[in-house]
Image (cartoon, rainbow, N blue to C red; front, top):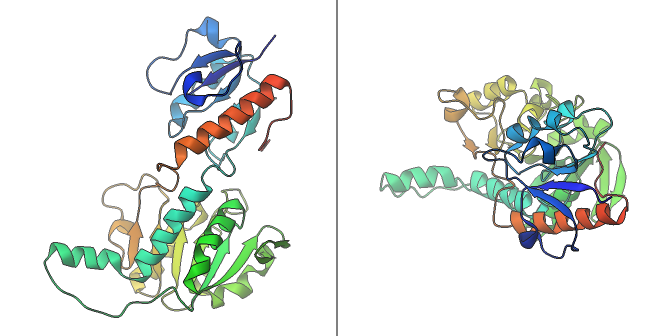
Length: 306
């Protein structure tokens, strides 16, 4: 028998699928399909940005064998997986969009765009010198496919890139340093971009000691996960005026009204929008089509995390 798939998109939107696939469609809103249909689901693609509703459905899928996310990170999914169920992530799907946002945050922060926007609202002409990205050193922590995409976008900006991953290796762009080398690299960085997944090892990787090693006016850009950064330690550095930050993710998240990060000096905050852009859907559909064809043919799936 063919596996039954529970998907967030109808087959005609995905396109290129063989006839005869046993498909159910649920986008995470409203009531899911009836239990008698859920009983046969073996492959469940979680609706993007609706994980809480989707994860609540897992106990109602007794035949489940595979969970497919449309996110690169799976830290919020893994604790909810039933025994024997594997999870596949969306490695590569968000490379372009997240790298693009990281570039936006770097340039906007360095060139003082938030301040100029405020001055525009006040109709005040404020002509000042601002730091450039040219001639700076950018340290990318968590150098994977998004890191490579970011480096490709950094290339025309006449800056140097240092790469750090869990283990040392060579990449197409140059050497990747192991995480053990990080303390010695931090003092050279003008910009630090966090792209690492959230794991027990990376939780509060950016702590008071990490931040103390950064030079005056260094910029910390977090497009990874909020808890990679110790918020209290970062706030201390921001409020002293020593460091800058551009944060697409925070801890806590969503950032509640009244939280001191909202008004911290030299801080730019975006509401976790690295992935949701016009680049998302076509790449999501391509990934899902490929995985469905593999599963239908009995071939190994891509991007298996566990």
